Image (cartoon, rainbow, N blue to C red; front, side, top):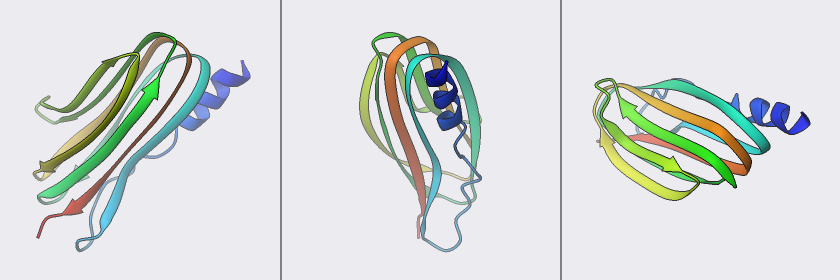
Length: 124
């Protein structure tokens, strides 16, 4: 039970609007969990005000079950998509102004961990 509570607390971290003052790098999301058992999902929105460079890293592994991690735009087009048990990816993409979504789902996952983070830098 303690592992499930810990995973839920860690998974509830973050994603605030990704609005960029000037050209500094701004964190969009950072999500971490280590768990014994986990069955949950969440979707968070981040806003891009003007054309920006999106950079993200996605890393995790589970013993059983299925993880889904997705970044997509308001039209449903994927910027990043993973479904499976083990992932270790870096993503870099130019995003136009609009709403984007970070989505993660753990389906009956056991003995796992993940660390996902993303940031934006406004293009000049």
